[in-house]
Amino acid sequence: MESPRQQHGCTFAEYEVRKTNLRGRKQERLLRITDSGLFNLKKPDVVKRHIPFTDIKQITLVDTHHFTITFHSLHDYNYEAPTSAVIVRELRTYLEQHTDTENSQRAIEMAQRSPKPPPPLGISDEARIALQRRRKLEQLTGSCEDTRIGLEVDALVYDRTQDLGFTIKAYISNFKPGASFSETGAAVRRFIDQVKRHILTNCDTDALRQYQIVPEQFGTPVAPVAIADVVERSLFSAIVHPLTNPLNAQLVCEFETQDRAIRAFGDVAIAQEAMDVAATMIDPAGYATAVTAMRRLDGALNGMDAALMRGALLDAVRAIYTRAAAIGMQNVSADEFLPVLTFVIARSGLSRAMSAHAVLDTLLSDVDRRGEIGYYVTVYQTALGHLLSLTG
Amino acid sequence: MVSEYKLVLLGEGAVGKTSILLQYTKRKFESDHIMTIQASFRSKVLNIADQTITLNLWDTAGQEKFHSLALVYYRDANAAVLVYDVTDRDSFDRVQNWVQELVKNVDGKPILAIAANKTDLPKSQHVISSEEGREYAEKVGAQFFETSAKDVDTLNPMFLHIAKNLQQQHGGRNSTENVRSTRTLKIEDDSAPEASTGGCGC
Image (cartoon, rainbow over all chains, first blue to last red):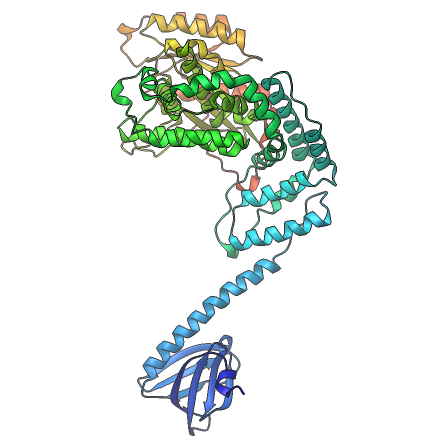
């Protein structure tokens, strides 16, 4: 049989105290702190009162021998003990720990209770349930808004029971490559643009945007999310990723020779020859980070992952700027940047450098083409052209 | 409403393209002694008549041997700034080549501006007069500006002119691509758009 002590839960501490009741009578008591609250016991094990932690308002040390516990629901308890100071300190510690866990518990409950925004248009019940589950998880793990909106868009795009999802699926299963990769790429791009325009104009982007409103108590302000960018990312993986095999096959057919020519520059001596800047500026070790980043382009291309491809190229670019700053070049003009990028490409020995360019160039959205990634794709292309011209 | 436009800076090496780009996009309160990495691609956000316009400025490599590859830089450009050095006749001649190429190779009609750069150098060193530059600009339908990369006040009117023209030409056409959350839209208010004509000949 369980002892009364065990019934009170896990005991943290016990103190022998003397309580003064309302009539001024002193009573010998045992104050026990457990995980379920405070117990005021008459020795040995008679529970006079069980006080949950939430009911405790304040613990006051009156003097070295006296302390008071104030409750929300009841009159104060006045205690007397030679070790009052120690008891008060320890009690407060337990109380604090307990409130901490309780607060996080409350936060989770609030997250679960927080008003649910209406679902975006055209989602089947099944998709909605999956979405709600993921959204709750996102809320608890505190993921960024981009991801959350991305999930909403994914739900639209992957839902085969609706027109949009069905159209995409039909496009993928009926896909036929064009005469050249640039033609194929342009056709895919056109399709992505059409779908994107459809989502941005016909679907309720306001509904998507509502998800950005996060209850204040969860703190950090939300970073701006460009819905068009999120839609672009979602669509790219939904449409281009399933086409990885046919696209790659066509790339290999078309660019194998050029890819091989650029791969041959992996040799350092040749790479240096490709440069038109002072040899001192080119320190192979210095650009190692850029070269490593650039090498990721191959893997990203194999999976037709646009985000990774951009990431690889932009990381390489940033590594070049960082390196330039480290050797005291504060401003890097295009005249200086281009040779260095050429060098980095040559050193990285990419196995499919031209193919990577073809994908980035033909599949970039119009906005991207005019933006930062567009710029560096252009410089990358110029660098490749220069390398190829060296091979004759 | 947000619109993004591509603007290329073209010109021979060492005419000051990069300096113009950096001077113009330098952030306020960014002091010179703090080491910041300066890229050859930069964006500038302008706020004109309640519309936010993003100018993406593309620096190009001016080296002769890359010239044949330059086409890829100005493809799809919405605007171009052709830069020459007022103390260098060759650089002015090159601008004329660039204009011909642009007209030949760019679809649509990019907004053109010609920047006579390095006007801060003593007049005695100038070999191309304002009149000659302006006359040429008029001939090719470009707007003419006298600039100094050292003085941002000579650059603002030029880019503002381009931005306003882009806004007029495109209306809100580029905007559907860029539906951003209005709640969190960040607007960098730009310095005085009150018509300081600068070197503008209009």
